Image (cartoon, rainbow over all chains, first blue to last red):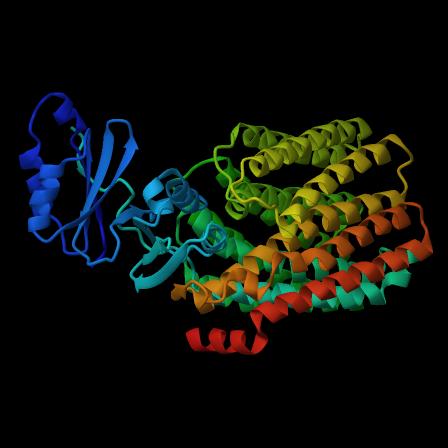
Length: 156
Length: 434
């Protein structure tokens, strides 16, 4: 089964003072076991996080910019909250640039409080020296079927 | 409300060809470089004595262009096309079989040239031509399906069109050597047309086009403008066709005008590369990438030398100096520079990329550290500058020393490539996968 990053942006709903609960639950209902659900909201939606955690989901969130929160829900058991990005449709060097940008612009990664998992078509050979230089740990698993998962984290 | 989506593309198919396809060509290219290096040292006195049209030197030139550069470039294109345009290579089986046709054709052609055996040149030249047409056709067919349609696509597409033209002209030259009426009278024009389409057309367009992808990839650059690339494409085309027209109408003014436009193309290309490098994430510009940048400067120098040569007496040693500087300084140095990045990358990908863990898996730099490219690349550059001076000044000693220095540098390059490739392992891999 291929992993998907399923994205739902509810910021316009929230700005219009509407409740996007039904849309969120409909999206969650369509997820496969390996999928990651990415929710874009204007605040960190604690009630929704609690609700989905009771359904077996784990979560990780980042403040992308003021009033733009990105929360991801996934089922895989991980030792650190894990943020995922799907680079499979990007052309080189965009996957690497995007990964390094994310790592350097969000404190939870630098502080070792959150891991980053990137999904690539191929092993990002040129990324590893950059991660070494920035003192990150990494582990790559080639899942076959056009999916290479690289988990990146910093030891606390 | 934007709804549910998978904006990063979700499912995409793997586009890369099997390892065996590019690796066979790259291996042939490395062997070709080695043979060229040894033959260059052997022929250094003939070159020093200015016997550049002897069969041995003609064969030497084609060992470089067909045996090393084109073989290497074909391997790299099969790999890079899929990465640059996110497309698969069409008719992979034909591409794989075509390797053998090319290897036999090019080897036979070079040997026939060395013996000046016209029948052999005709037979093996035709085989090589068919193989190159097939290759160019496969690439054209593959990139025709690309959804990304930028300047790079035009560079790569036109490069292959010009390759087909260069090969056709070369074939016509061989026919004319058999005593073919009208063609025999224009053989010198055909020769210059062949040189222009092969070097100023195919190799130049390909190196320029792929530089727009490879330089950002290896320096991790982003946020640079691509606006200049279109101008480079325009100038490079105008220069090429202007020079060809100048050759056929026998006009020095045409040639000079086209040379000026060619210089503009190189200046523009150089500025594009420097802008990319300025926007890099990587702290250090590695030696192979510095060589690629130096090659662009040398290309600029070669075109400037062409203008100087046109403005002064049009004598043979000067032209040979210009051609040598362009082919070796711009094209060969670029190919060698990129080879130091591409070959270790491919080998690492094949042997180590399945499961990677920090401090447990060898990295690309463990196969061949970019710093180790220094002796080969800078030795080659120094030798090349000396060769240009020696050739243009008709200075025997300098030319011979330059040839030996270039030869040694290329041999170092070959040994390093073979250490990375590990012939025993690669033969096992090539036979196992097939």
